[in-house]
Length: 268
Image (cartoon, rainbow, N blue to C red; front, side, top):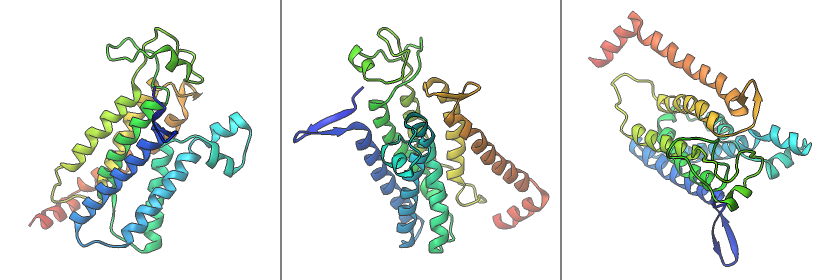
């Protein structure tokens, strides 16, 4: 595709890193806007954002560490962090852990999931543009919106046996961009009932993305690890089950007679 976005004073500006940076900037701005709407600014949020970004970056690297080790036989953490790839699923997991840990370290007790959800969605939508411009787009398809790449572009895609002239490919990253953009809009206008657990918006978003990403993996062309499933899918299975169990428990509790009485009292 277009791994180099443009040249500036003889320096090649990479597409992937540029849109990742723009996604982080957009996500941070949306987070601050949401935080400002929530109430008086709390300086501890600065530490929470910093911890989230740091652990997200580490998680993204560690998420593909197994692949780097298998290809290079370099088991050093420094090698994985410097020369390994990146996994957006690992990045989300790391960011979630980073937010939880940082909140405990700074003593911030209020849930931040509702602030992070639209911010993460818009950041993902923008960041995935860089992936679309610089990475393998997807598996072969006969659908009318498939991509037919030039011979020069196909030669730049490594480890892709079906990336040959005449083969039309799934624009898998465009599917993800559309999903995250739609989720961003939905999260901003989400109807908030009078009784709802603070922070659930992020869990709703993560559950929706986990399910969506599991099926998109079938047209991504990522390496299969076990029984036709990729590494991302194997990670997503337990993650999805945990999130689904959380909401199942919430549904069971909210549907109990006691919870209905509490809800009626809260509603007045």
